[in-house]
Amino acid sequence: MSIDRIAAAIRDIPDFPKPGIIYKDITPLLKDPELFRETIRALAGRCTEKPDYIAGIEARGFIIGAPLALELGCGFVPVRKKGKLPYDTVEQSYSLEYGTASIEIHQDAVKPGDKVLIIDDVLATGGTAAAAVELLKKINAEIIGINFLLELSFLVGRDKLREMKVDSLITV
Image (cartoon, rainbow, N blue to C red; front, side, top):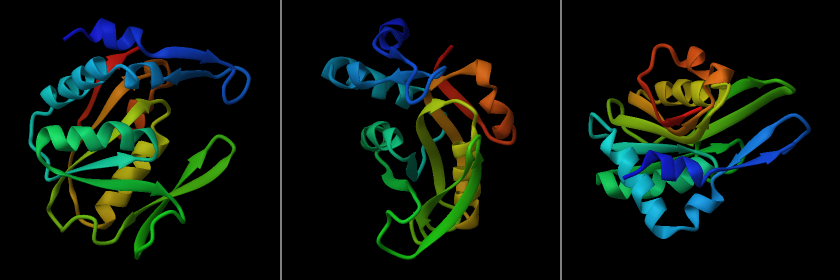
């Protein structure tokens, strides 16, 4: 397993979605089945405690979270943007640099005390991940950590997650 190979497959897209932003595009990694499998196994190998569920944050957290759940032999629950889930939900709002957003989870996604590992592709400012933590606390999940494929350390997103165990496969 080569973290360098995984990191090399993530390409930079300048000025997306707006000028001054460098978007981290994971699609080259996803289209290589061996490298994608290697990435999921690397993420699984970093789990120090077996979760009952992986909570994947929309949308790229779904792409990583579902195969990770299969690899770890646990369930998968989606954390979605407001209005996208069909059943009764619990909601958490959070601040963005240009306003607010909300995420939701089904109110019965996990039982109180179930161990949940939150997964997303990139840790940037930490706002969405912090909102996911609060959301899962509302349904009494035991959050055992938050894992990311890539962490943009210069954006200090970890600061919003100080109370949580945070792990990133790649840090830039």
